[in-house]
Length: 207
Image: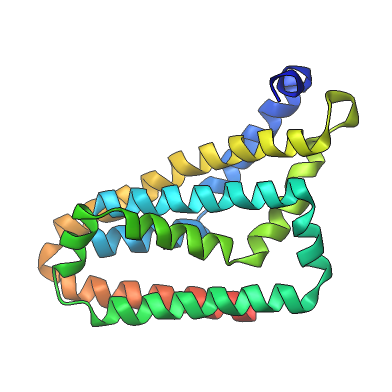
C-alpha cells in the first residue's frame, strides 16, 4: 500500500484532496445529519455523528475497491432495498427525536457518544447514492501506472474520509454549541431535528 502511495502523482493527490474538501464544505446530507445530531445531543454528539459518517464513507470506498459498489449500481433491486432501509432508519430517528423529552437528548448524547457514531455510520452506509458517488468520483484519480487500482481507491477513500471528518465535525460541533446557547428552546430544537431526519428520508426516497 505504501509503495502504491509513493507511486501516485502528488499533483493528482493534491487535486483530489482539494476537490474532496470543496465537496465536503458544500452542505449536503452528511452535513445536515451531523448538524441535526449536534442540535439533538450537543457538540460531542455532532462530532461523533461526523465520525460515524466518515467511517461509512470509508466503508463505501472499501466496497468500491472490492467491486461491490458496481454490483449494487447494476442491480436495481439491491439499490432500492438499501435505499428503503436507509429511509426507514431515518424515519425511525425522526420519531425518536420528536418524542424526546426536553434536555434528555443532550445529556444522553454527551455521556454516551457511541449511539451518535452508530447513527452516523448507518445512515451513510444505508445510502446507496454515496456508493454511486464514490464509485464515480474516486476512480477518476487513479492510473494503472501507479499500482493496483483497488489500493489507489482505498488511499483516496482514506483521504476523502479524513477531510470529511474534519469538516463535518466542525458543522456538527457548531450546531451543538448552538444547542447549548439555545438550551431554553431544547424542546423546539428536538422537533426541528425530527423534521430534518424526516426530510432526509424523503430526499433519499424521491431524489
